[in-house]
Image 1 (cartoon, rainbow, N blue to C red):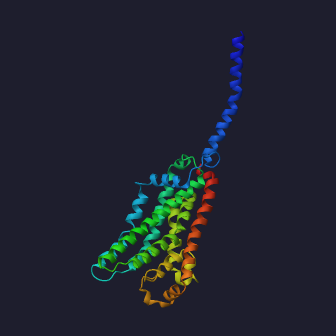
Image 2: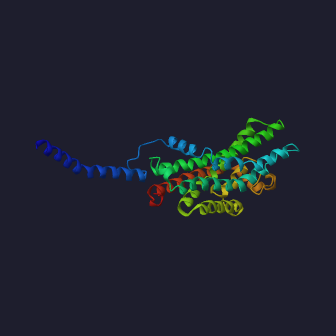
Image 3: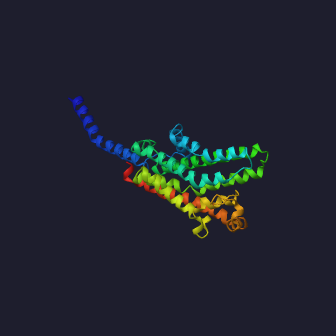
Length: 293
């Protein structure tokens, strides 16, 4: 009888403790789903590597490389018949690069939306941190596209034996400037895709960038503000105007950029700040949004 009473007491104690344990497990599960409470601390670098592995053989990486080829290859072909033309580079960052960024960003964001964000929730890291990793991965793909353009132009100039360290540095600055000044499209595209769908995430930032890029002449001090800065700032590094004409065709803009280098670097800083601010705001929204759970 004593043994039976002891067993019954143990069962009662376990039953009494079960709701508390279940509640604790439930709180932990909720914290894991939210991506904030109870999530282990993992470095942003590791989350970024996980994001890169997820898309290692997917469409965004192929898009970033393939879309960057047409215009610089055109310049490479023309090089065999004369001087290196920088106009195709202008067509790249004014036309095809915004399309590339919009498509890559839309593909990256839509891949998680199709799976109802299970791949993000399964990471067990704060959702804001996962959002930053996604934005930085898209930025890396944009930089990869511009590096492809840079490499082809380096090869084109090297064919004629005119390659120098100064030329490589100048073109590298142009590639970095176009990457930074167009980076605002990435958090905007990620947010719009997560909030309003793939079409909105692709076409709205693309329309703003294209219209703003072509409206550079109508905006005072355009190099300070994206999206016009993407069309104007490269003029300070490569001898081609936003219109695609040689720099000598408009010495007013070219002379202003050459005379005031701080204005150019201020525009690059504004572009970097736009990316950071938009990513931080959209990451805060993503971390608290009930739509992603």
